[in-house]
Image (cartoon, rainbow, N blue to C red; front, top):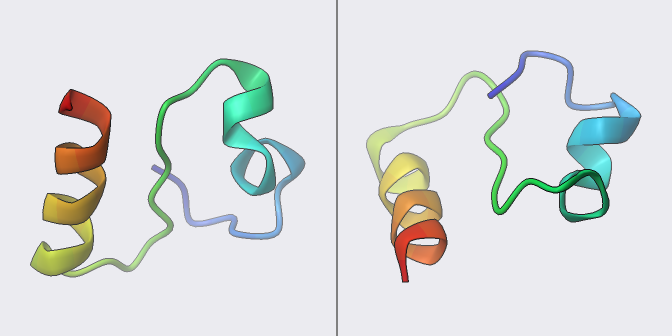
Length: 40
């Protein structure tokens, strides 16, 4: 999770070993979608 949506790691999170990413601000639907994808 980051407030820096233009950061290279946020733009290419999978390349850096992350399964998902959220940029701030986010709403409940965004959080649920990323959690669902990461946990499946």
